[in-house]
Image: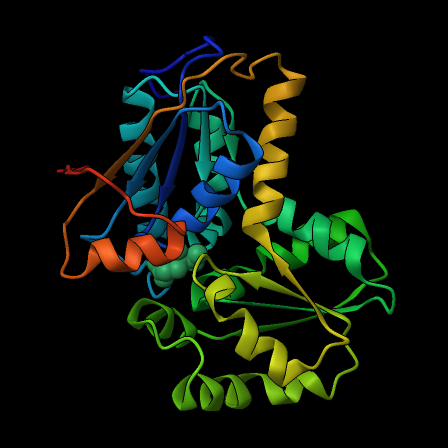
Length: 274
Ligand code: DGL
């Protein structure tokens, strides 16, 4: 079990980590649902992407990211990265004294609740889809749901570049998703931090009959429920939000603001695992 944090103080912050700044979509959802909670965010911008790496490497990085948050006394660690959640959640849960919440289970729950036809799809990075973590999570909830899983890795750089809705995004979405559009699915899980930004183009390709499930919303719901059930909600605030990145890459402020839906304010560079 990792050392540092055994925080039982409801006023302690929630820790959120991601491979980069895409996990700010989860912070955004947490801020809306839990406005009194302080949040510490760590984005591993020096080592992003995780989604192209092996499960072993992703797990090593995820432990280092979570260690950083635990050292800041967080009461809950949220692995906002789907690639890290699919590769490392069990190991993180085993190592850390505070609860660890991933994005896979909340997303799977919402997907299963949304489908009527029992035919669903999941898209994500190569690491997430190869791990089959979503299939396992969905099957654990409902064994009769048919699942189509497809890696759509180019959506990640498109979102980072801000090419959310033009020709290139449209062409990429068609190439990846027009097969799925023929499959009579009625719900699709956006299994990557970056994909909610591409909702309009994905929806256009799949059609209005396919509901898009954004895991960040569902993860915020699950975080609220977990804290409430343990009596760990912060009763009063004030909520402080701190952002740490392992590299202050060009344009991080603009891209970060796009994911967060607001300016980040002060961002501190910090290294982990060195
Ligand atoms: N945060 C990653 C995820 O949700 C996407 C970016 C990456 O590949 O690291 O899978």
